[in-house]
Image (cartoon, rainbow, N blue to C red; front, side):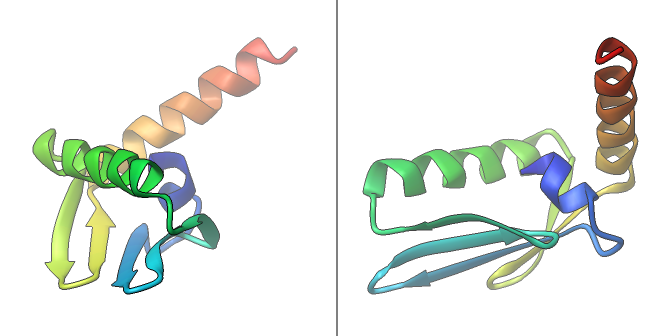
Length: 86
């Protein structure tokens, strides 16, 4: 979720809950479109954890934004991945 959100300039995470299930998008990536309660709970927990550790902030009812620290961590993760892929 963090890497997907950091892949866009906005760093947004959008959560839409409807009778048909939960839809979560981060950046340009649809991460979840499911009626599966277990999967929905897993993604809600991930979002709550990002908020708890200060990597994501609540903006409005269905809109969250990652923080500057989250962008830095995502950059470091991508650099590490690139360095180990050789």
